Image (cartoon, rainbow, N blue to C red; front, top):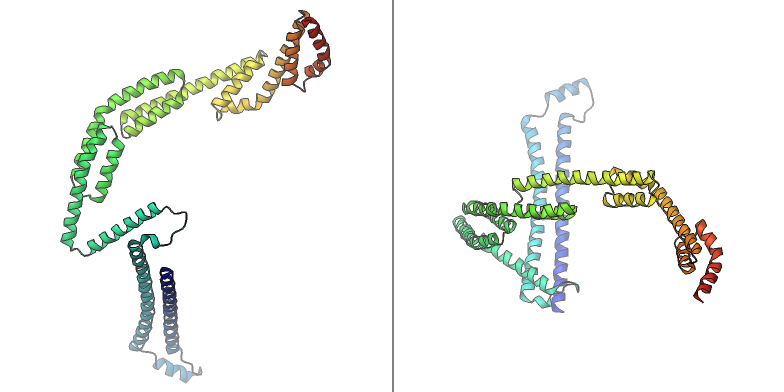
Length: 386
């Protein structure tokens, strides 16, 4: 409870301070506007005195025009008051920044002293919050330590940190290279270079990475080409894309890998174009020969494999007609088969096909006719079983 009382008192004090900051901002505006208004009105009165507009008054006003020193005095006074308004704004901003810094310091001090007593939402992860808090404390301590160093000491500290990171990378980079993990090795060196750009050793590490990468580049390309040949023969272009993606990730700047990817892209476009043309011809020939099932299968395959192609757009409009004609042909085939089975007195097989036709095409004319013939077929099938 004491913690919450202290937080309430701190909140009240912060509220009063915020009101003071707001008041200072308001006073700054008032002083600035008043100074500008006073200066402009004074200058206007100096040039246009409020006297009767007689000839003699005009001559006297011309003789008594304001001097340069009087104008400079008015302008200096106006600027001085304006500077006072700006000063009030600056004071308000300084207080606001001090409040922010005080809030951070109090929060860090409170949490670092008794982390379990500080309130946190129920859905926060205590472990993650504690880790974040510890990292914040370390950063604040590091900032404090650096601020107390001289320029020479900061340079020495920067040099020591760079050497420490260099020693780490000199151990880590060869391990990444043995695993052929060029990307991670490059990223580590890049981060180190951004933090310590004056170190020449980063060039040596990058040269080492590139040299090792080039040694295995040809081997990786040959292995990828063997996989790609097998996959292209099967038409598995999606898997080809995966192999290429993995190869380019390992060697993103390789001219050979980029050239291979471009060549395969052209081959894939040509192969897909040939496949679309072949399926289109099958669909058209099937429709011309009234082989509706063949035409429907080719059209459905083309639409599924190449949904965005112009051929798919054209066949998509014909698909309902092809499907209807294919169903009509299938019903006619089943009807003829039933008729042949009845002639051969194979009533049970004819009855089975008749029921299949009724189930698959319940609203067709054949189904309507067969529903009236089912009792007779069942009677004949039962007679044969006896």
